[in-house]
Length: 586
Image (tube, rainbow, N blue to C red; front, side, top):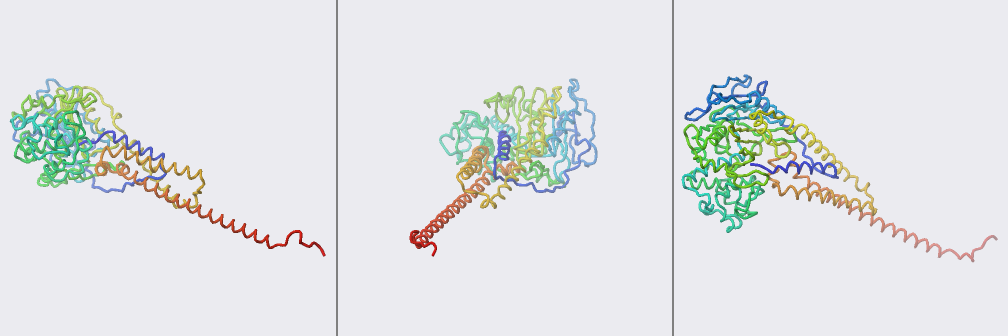
């Protein structure tokens, strides 16, 4: 799952503007949150390395000597020498220590609690490594730590569809209604034109916004989710162009379920995970937690979110109906096997999941995204590499295939607004190609959150000052024309125009329910700020009107008193004797 990158820049700029302009604003102070110690990684911060190890054929196709069943935290990692393999003939220019140093430094710079990396090259898994903690009470992060992989799930859902295409059970150019007769959107005639290929290639006309909006409505079953789509309006006709939407892949999950006769979860586990030996992968977070509870005394791994710069463990929402688009669960080890299968033409260890033609079709540059990249069947093509990333409320993943190597990374945290993890994997890719990435090119977490928290504090102080001024308004405000004009202009600018502008920019990006759960802290401020401005502006306007009313009454009272005084004065003069009748002297 992913949210628009512009959100980071938009909301940050708005808060900066607010700190300069606002007479009143809002701030939700970060509470002191306590958590269990998040594991104790070794001095180097590294856990569970394996490299140079080929995938052996076995019942579960696991990587030999790479599985770490929660080793004692205090034990340092054992760095075994590379196993002799066919790739030794063409030894890579990179060394595992380079990946160690870069990945762990990136994790620390971006304040990621736990990170796992898997690298495949020349038909082998050549590197797997975990860094940091899997979460409070969950032990160290390892290549076997399972987490929701976000929109990286789309590639796996697409693979399931293509398997059924290969079996002749699905046709790519067939309307969705051939497989889901009850499927319809707000415009039934238009939605009847959507084909399976439109869903795979993100050209159905379903919008990015609606795909984000339904992140807050992921409960229930997949078929219940399909029924809810009847209120959704296409923003363009099917096939007209690219629009990334999570809804497309949720519909594909329903098609897999309907055509195969199995639940989506059962199909994924039996037809993809099990044949590939992806023994730590699951078709939902709930299944993953249930399986872990049976085999481990540790707590399940935790995702993390940033609360004003403080990384805190959080729970994901309910997404049982939207698993096909972004909530499959996997590990760095298992996704390395998946990458190998993709790179080997659909087969691994003698097991074929899809023929070479099907895999090649999945990697085609089908529809232009508009920035020189192309999308097709759960993969994005940019230059000479094929990739996809995924983000949930509190996890991040990314995979890339380039030439003879593939890379997968998995992090147990996510930051929707301030910090992008998008440069971690390219840095690893640079090392594999003999280049030296710069850690300094990654976002500076401390600096960015120092600025953001400074703005938040400034906003809070401005708001408190504005509230304080309300209690002094009656004494401080003098309803003279120039003061009335200035205050009305300030109210219109800061308490009407600014909050309307914030709502105009932010509401089209994501509903407030999604912002509240996906972007705590600063996101909460973005939600409450406009309404706080409206409220304080309305109160100040009311006080201004009251002061003006009081001033008018006092003016009338003074005028009446003056008139009465004048009248009284005239009456006194008329009772006095005329000047000419006065007697002076005796």
